[in-house]
Image (tube, rainbow, N blue to C red):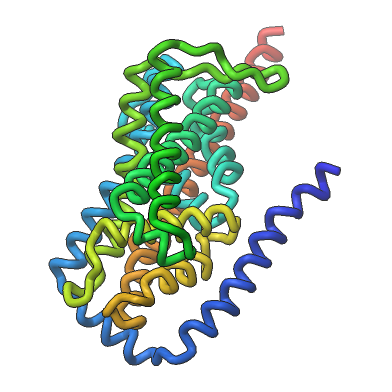
Length: 328
């Protein structure tokens, strides 16, 4: 049964990519490549600089996720190591898809070499995933309450229902903070018990979680032209919806899903489709493609060093064995 399940998510991801590309083709077939290149060329150096800065903010916040989880575990790891592990983990998982599983493999390998147990790494992975979910819920609630019209771009619903849903999301966040403050009983799932983090850890989550999403949305916002730009809050809300659906789809890198949802939600604005697509290409380049290239280099260097240590340890063991034989 387990072997069959191993093929489920890749099949779902592939199906999501194919279906999304079909929808995206129907959406973009009227756009010429020359228009997209022209839109990319119109992005100023200042806009590129701000988008790059937003990328650093996003990945810096992701490193903070790991740091917060380590604080919860009471383990100390240097900022340099945490940053490298976090960057590599998310750069790979964002592109591969099924981020919890792919990210877990990287963390098990890296943090295991630093002395963390399997149970500790499992808690770290779970808490980092929950921190991201917390940020999505918190920002989603704020957008739905403050700018309910964003959701109306995707679904047809009364404004008061959208706002009510936003208050509901913010209520979940408040309940989580209350549970941490009042030290509610742990949630028991089978043999596992999930404990509320300490209040200082929770407060850090409330800042780090939205920061990553704010930075990621900023990449697209800064790449859009000023004329017709609906504003950052709208871009953030649309990005939250499209990015969340892309993750749920399990499509590698949300390929096709992110673009289709984002472009549909922004269709009513004065921005041209070529300008929107160009901004999304900037996002993919800065947030996905370039980090993936660096992450592959980091993984190769790490595995090379581990292999060298293993070979050196084997050689020393063989030398020690020969000396024992001579002594005998």
